[in-house]
Image 1 (cartoon, rainbow, N blue to C red):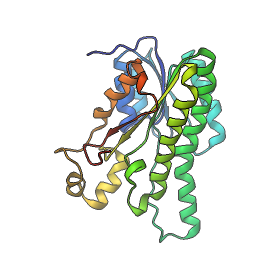
Image 2 (image 1 turned 90 degrees about the horizontal axis):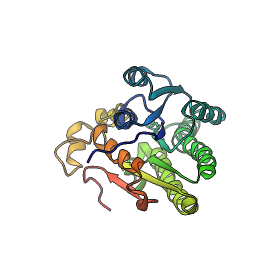
Image 3 (image 1 turned 135 degrees about the vertical axis):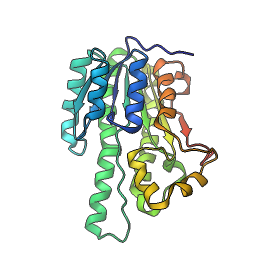
Length: 252
């Protein structure tokens, strides 16, 4: 079934590579107007701008500087002339062993929380303000299986931040549904991205493959179609739910 998203305005954070790039590409191919967030690297978003000059526009923002996020959101609205869907995909992961000094561990913890959870919260707040005015809107948060099964000791903060995203999603769904607003989270497992490569390098790809039920790792392109379906409105009665995309490595 081909899904058409013409007349949909969508913001995708962390769109330069990995899952965000795959999501943005799928949305643009479906006809959506997509604001592409990036931080430092822009090769991916610029390639999408070139391919979809009318539908795509890139916007830079460093989410570690939380005070800049509201202005970034307003810039997106100024270009898109509206917003139908916010996709909080931008995230980071730092290996943060408890053997680190207290100062280093705390700094790493705060960095992860600021980008994975605080930025998501701020953008959700801004989107909710706008969605309430038009009595419609969707928020999709890209979480992780780590929110449910936990993660290795080096990734305590990452797992905690993703669990926070899931709780935020549920609260939005329960609190704003009567105002035409729905919210969803997607929980990938190991996905072949640059961020996951650090763990693959440490533990080996064979170790990761043994942890899943399928014969190959999840790819970003495997996740994107689910996002397109949610954006279409055909999954609205799943509001508040979290969709597992972890190749059977964690079954709830």
